Length: 440
Image (cartoon, rainbow, N blue to C red):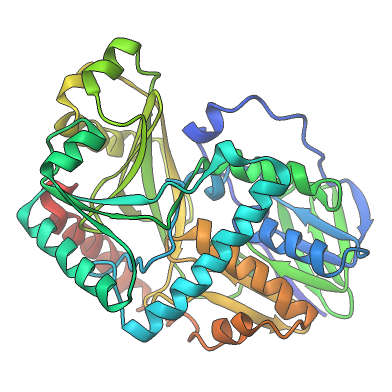
């Protein structure tokens, strides 16, 4: 038997706006005592609940248990911008594209994950939280516009639909003349991430046992896997770990996962007068021409701004970091929406991203009947869903061809030694964000 003690557990601070605007959830069921299952999944985000749903389809008579350290929708799953993106989206590049062969495969797999989520939205009535609206890439500079035109050329090579937008189009959609042009791609989903993930958990609860506010303190793996919490344990012969960067907290992928936080602010409710002053369309989502720029979403009477990345190997952020990045959000907001001067941010929060130096996932069977799905490289909504559902297929042995594709991905590369990482990672993030310029 192998023992993996958790050196840390998730403890996200500051309520994310997506969670705050939802009705209060019912009281959580905390794991107490021993629970016997056929499957245990640690982590109830996009990956964990995708794995649970897929298992409920493949082995409907098996006992499936899911355990999470926090309330569902409170952690990283409810702290992202809510874009489920089908097309290439490489955060570290000058634009979002990669090699044609790799991108074609990734598009097919991303769309399978989106369709899987779409079927869940249909099954559980989650359409308010899952809208196939497409996304906009917005450019604020001529350099950004050139990057978008290169991206569009890449999309032509991939035979993908898109629409080129000029400054007039951008103002018609967003209400602001900040943007000089853009690219619209129709395949992305705009999700309310906390609403979707909480609704998914509620829908699964008839077939899956879900425990919340139950941080896992120890894993003992062997013929039977034991998942230990402060007040109980789950025993099962098969274990799926969907804890993203916290794989390293249990000793897996040590010195291979790069822990980064990004930050968001959500406005208070805009008045009718303020919405008229803004103009534009009532709902849209925009990612910047430069991957380090500002992501903006308008969701009816609120606007969300997300930008700034920090290197946090401790896997935690602080009130000070959230407050400091909030100043950046305010500057980005008023630069884009001067007609909304005086509109305050009601919610500010940070969210944990797990990256690898080579943009590779953590996926596969790492011990006998122990499977992992993590390191989503900033695309947790779609990649988490994808690798979670494929982890279930891998564990059951369905022969799903996408499993073989996922297993062909290289493992995350080893990071540089800590003195270099501690100095180099923040400097690299700073340089990339400086490069973004007005796009930030």
